[in-house]
Length: 177
Image (cartoon, rainbow, N blue to C red):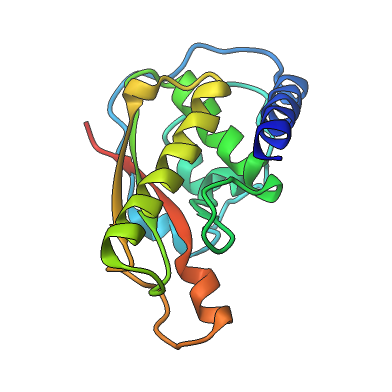
């Protein structure tokens, strides 16, 4: 089942990105500096854009709604990216395509259930899954690092499903060159 759904998701994402592509402009030069506080919400001057017509710039990391979404959630014991996160992953892949010097780190996480070894391996598989989708959408895998934290960095500590579902994630973090 996994092998039948995954190519459909990748093709669908590629078509969505291609449909949103417009006039191409030369990417801005210079380093990418990202303040992680961009994940906390909209900043003033946000246009709410999720499909920019030109190339992404470093400022888009804070302004663009699609790029501010930097968390991909997963189902229990799964490393398959959900369809609802394909657009956000596509935006980050486009950002990397537009900025060949940009680099990111994908941090894989799990909930507390399972052994430490299992959770570290699952967190790694989740990060690799997101990297694979980005690579299929044109991002260079050399721009993407990944780390697994397993269950060691939860965002929620209550022993229930609503909390565990928040911990099953990959966080997208841009690195400074």
